[in-house]
Image (cartoon, rainbow, N blue to C red; front, side):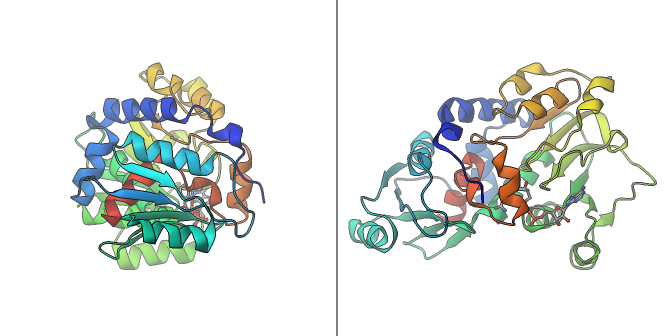
Length: 304
Ligand SMILES: NC(=O)c1ccc[n+]([C@@H]2O[C@H](COP(=O)([O-])OP(=O)(O)OC[C@H]3O[C@@H](n4cnc5c(N)ncnc54)[C@H](O)[C@@H]3O)[C@@H](O)[C@H]2O)c1
């Protein structure tokens, strides 16, 4: 399995600041405000202990320090336990930590020791990315397109439905589609009968999942998916408002930047993006998303 390298995590805080600006430009609110509104909580003076975990493929250099930097960016006190695994866990609990952050190859969780709540990364990712898509300031529409109904996509879809959006969804997995239609009442997106959306939440591990017929001239695509969902040829043919500031601030996602610059506002924040991420997801493992800033804040909020 391919994992993040320390180089992937370089320049994290600058990237985080830039992504926050991108979100503000397209939704009117920054990450913190959005998370506060979604979860109804605020960071107080919680002490966050980051416990390195050596299980599976082991510790990624800079991983814990990246989490610490993000913790502090959002105004919380944080520290990395001296030892990993059980000894680190013991230390964190003994120290009186309020929230533990821990990730192995399969799960990234935040556990609030004070209220007992535990939050999973994939759910928080779905909720916050879909929330961002649904806040696009340049539309009055209530229609949102969801592409991908896996762990992240389904959580986001559920969130959008609860918020009263009219959700159209597409996933080649018929079982997932049927579940979303039956349980959430989504509309099946019919590619043979295209409809254009100004808000798109994309959550697949595949490129080029968005085609020209799906998106309005001015739209917000919010996607945690790697690689970028927008095919380059769409950008070349796009006759759409350009918003280069947003794309230049993108997180090393060169394919994404290229493909989006003529097209629409795209929110893809993956500070540690590297080509290996796709492989990781190809195997169904999610180690590399563990330190994602948006997820992270969502986790904190969710668990507080
Ligand atoms: N799992 C996490 O915690 C997490 C967190 C952040 C980001 N991500 C990223 O989000 C993406 C989705 O993650 P996941 O855990 O939900 O993956 P998943 O494997 O659970 O789900 C992906 C879904 O996308 C669908 N899909 C594939 N190609 C498609 C296409 N062309 N059109 C529509 N749907 C298509 C698949 O059928 C599947 O249902 C990945 O790129 C991942 O890197 C995941």
